[in-house]
Image (cartoon, rainbow, N blue to C red; front, top):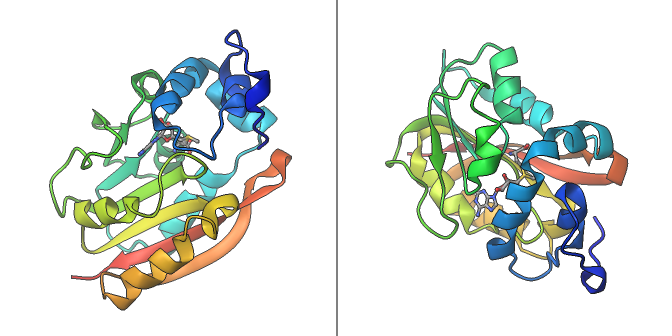
Length: 218
Ligand SMILES: C[S@@+](CC[C@H](N)C(=O)[O-])C[C@H]1O[C@@H](n2cnc3c(N)ncnc32)[C@H](O)[C@@H]1O
């Protein structure tokens, strides 16, 4: 996505305001405002403007590796709940979501989540250790959002032998050291990589992402 800080316009809304963010710097404080502003049009932009395919692709990846019947799933950075929509469509019934933006999560209310929890960036995820059979994190490891330090919390909340499935925008894969961090967690025997492939992400933007599934070790 292009970011032109110089043409910032406070009247911009939704995706336009997102495009204007300088995501090369830590944008966490501005992100909440941008997503709150984008919440009402996010789903349309996801489908029509960006043609984002990360949500169905990640749920499909979960299904390739999950053998637990009705796993308890945590959707971290759930936004408006598009991942939940795909979980529901595929028969999953036991899932929670968490996101920093209450406005985004408002749209997730009718998408099957048992609990929607407020997340504060930089603080521990709002749940106990070893709670979930699978944790998903889709569209969050990207410019200005969350770096590989976020893996520690995903590991903490996921049960031993549980799954973590996530996307990493190709634009931050090398620059933020994602591949090295994934390797470090493998070498520390904290997880085992099951799948790591580069696929379409935002089709209309020509952007791909790495799709990664790992099994948490005990
Ligand atoms: C591109 S959206 C993806 C939303 C949803 N997962 C999807 O695929 O449609 C990124 C989401 O990450 C959330 N977010 C921002 N910073 C975050 C952080 N540090 N941890 C978790 N989520 C964060 C935003 O509020 C936003 O809802």
